Image 1 (cartoon, helix red, strand yellow):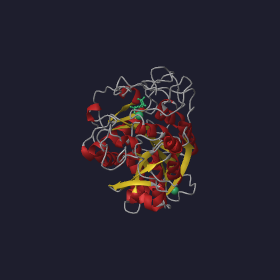
Image 2: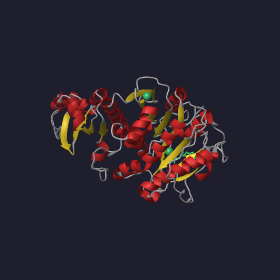
Image 3: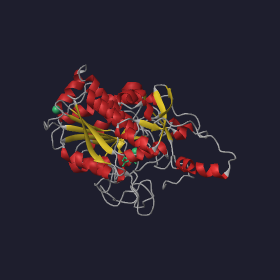
Image 4: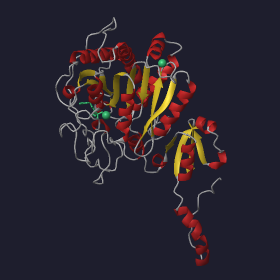
Length: 446
Ligand code: 0X9
Ligand code: CA
Ligand code: ZN
């Protein structure tokens, strides 16, 4: 039903008339409204009844509407990806984040990603299966794409895993694995290299491990890092990249036992449904390599992370990291510095790569995406850069996928390097701390 125009201010009214208006005033008080926007294509394709929403206007391909909580529930159930715009439109809000629409511009919220993944899966049913691998604390699906020929069959092929967004504020880390999925699906018929990889193995892509945190980062607090666990002391959040089970809680430097800390490790290994979902997926298939995308600093990190010691495969991991770095630099010159995680950055315990390597011995990497530093934008990547960052990561990801599919199941490798191995880039000095960009007045514990 179309709502009445804005209620006009009541100035002076006889008491009787005022009393007659009380129900309407109560209704107004009980009728909190937000403004949302969504792509007009979704609007048309999802069969929304035009009269059912309080439409405001259409701009740059997006429809804006006033919605109640019931309207939001209805949008969610119809699978419409929307962005809550209220804060942006408030008089106090500053410049808009983007011309592309939405508080998060061209980046994907959890809902926007869900829609995108469904559209991708629907468009390529012969190459991809969308699988919910778990549910976040707040009930959001954690989605995986399995990309392979005969994706509905269990062909027991070797697999590789790409993960995005353990950390809420690292929005770019959702986009790169998502674009990788799109690239594989849209180029299967055109590109023999893509086709060969997709035919020979399973490429598993989980663009968003931490949906609750991402939503919080979009709508409430841009610098949020952790998930949204309500901790026992009233603080929120477990650092999902400290919650994995290999050498979990090894010391209090690489993770923290304090719930309010940005690097709180949780009450137990895999205490969080988000990490548990990754654990179950990883143990259920024949994974031969893993990449977890983070931002920022432009690094390619390999185990160990928990202590500055080499693994038994230091040489292989180092060679792989250097090769990937060279492939990345060849695209447009951006140097991703390769190194052992503990030495090149800092020690962490309970991170993803230590666990996948620790339990399986397969090449496992944390890729810290651009920019290099806070001067380059820190956690804020220009929308116009998303595609270029993907392009420079793509050859390295294809290379690692091929390498993984040639490896033997015990994690040992039949070496086969590309003919055009370039020299590794120079190693740069690095200073990076988790909290380095946080305005000191803002507490992490909200
Ligand atoms: O601290 C992390 O979890 C990662 N960096 S981030 O700024 N994206 O939070 C790095 C994890 C890599 N592992 C180690 N450095 N040990
Ligand atoms: Ca297959
Ligand atoms: Zn991170």
